[in-house]
Length: 137
Image (cartoon, rainbow, N blue to C red; front, top):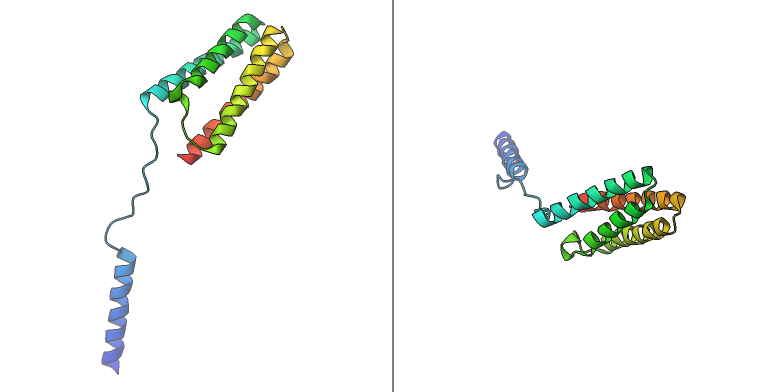
């Protein structure tokens, strides 16, 4: 009986070690999509224009505000700009489009307060999209 108990315990230890150890390799998580150089360049240009919009709003230069917001829309239209093909990404991208278009309208209408609010909305759309994209990746 003692011999049977030892064999049973030894068998359980071996099985436990095999289960715990597995095949000796840790499962590798799937590769995350990488951002290519073209996307990085577009995002850098987008950041530059966003900063120039802030500067223009702070100095009440609504012509430059509209000009740089228009440049943001051109960047958005670049086929390399789309980071992910999901409904959620499309929603955030649409939010960016609408607020940027409204920013241009406000600037052209010489409505500084509305332009400021649209800039904040545009920036929030950027935050939402970047958070989503990082979490998705």
